[in-house]
Length: 300
Image (cartoon, rainbow, N blue to C red; front, side, top):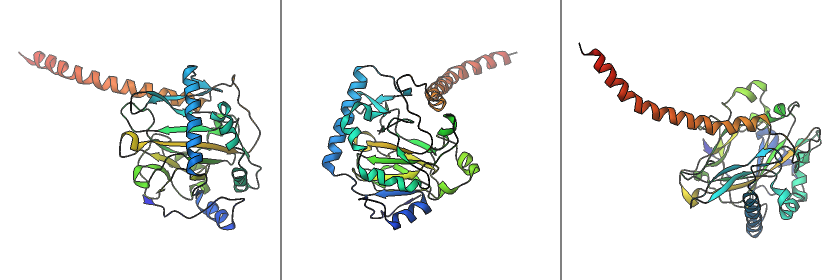
């Protein structure tokens, strides 16, 4: 794994030829200072208000997409993954109208792209924090494209656009990508890594020095993960808003939308982990008892 020396890309009215060539080769872009620190604070406040609204209403899903819950460094309950966040905040909705975000649609040509505010999972807010009670401190290797198959359509070009709301130096974990893997065939797309299970470093991966207000963009077929912070507590906090930029037929989500299969499988993971730990604990209890019984049966 190596650290990327940040390319001083800026996103203004449109993408430059240099940026287009870089994305075509590598499958990602990193824009510095997309929004100022004051705007970061405003968006964080909005995200907190959305979280409090959902908690107060005991929401478990939004438009069929499960919320991911955990506990903060002080033990307070928090939502570590919020879907369709902009539906609860006019300021977050207005942020998605930024003309610079629409300039990213050029990366999907010749396909016609759009900001999927009410499609897939909408505007997603991920809240990573490394504490014993956290349920979301890292994310294993994956690509975003195969979700289309679960939604009943063929894989279509898409972008995953992340607005970073906290500083996250390379040494503190965070986003990792494998450049060029967006050009791989189907074999690499499905079998290069074990989806969400594999968290190990890859010799070809690169990481970033992220500052609050930075924007990252990667192609949907690019392999990427989120590395766990080596520290715990407040210093490990990493909040990111993910904006889906999609192509293909419009498929709006609504309150009666069913939960996609891939989310149902993800919900089973904690149960399997609990079962694994319980079985391990049971084995520790049974093992000495079994040994004693075997010893007794050997006595002539």
